[in-house]
Amino acid sequence: MQKQEDDQIKVADIFEPLLDSQQAAELMHVHPETVKRRARRGEIPGLKFGKVWRFRASGLEAYIRNLMQ
Image: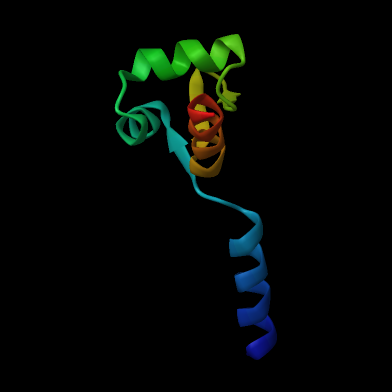
């Protein structure tokens, strides 16, 4: 049983939950269209699955930190 729990912890460390454009916008205090536009331009790291954009909170944090420097 311990092995299975260890495996689940490793997976949780590797895979960060993805945010949709609305959640990313709320985190950044901007409009969702702004998030999508910046992602299309390559300014914000994001993944597009079909018509839906997904973002990692850590990627957005790095983007904001770079803006502040």
